Length: 84
Image (tube, rainbow, N blue to C red; front, side, top):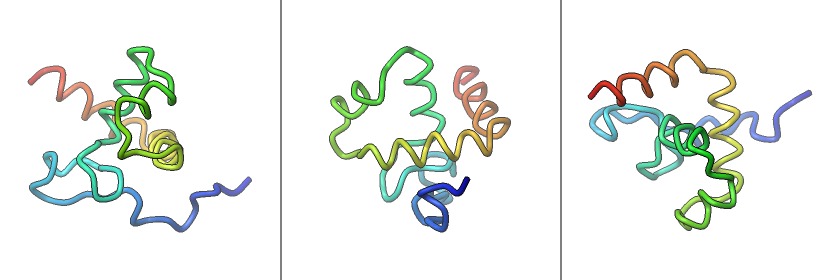
């Protein structure tokens, strides 16, 4: 099965000096790790979107797919954040 987000490489951006170089959602400071943390805290997609109207459902879909493909990297970023 192909992702509906396939080929949208620019949707997740890693920019040195922005959010510690962590992968962020397109031109925002919302990191994939931060979104995963919110989800782990029990926020639904609707809950996240209601608190952050600058995000879309497609943004969250890309974040969840990115996480599925980079679990170890994102989990390490979460651990690093928790240790800071």
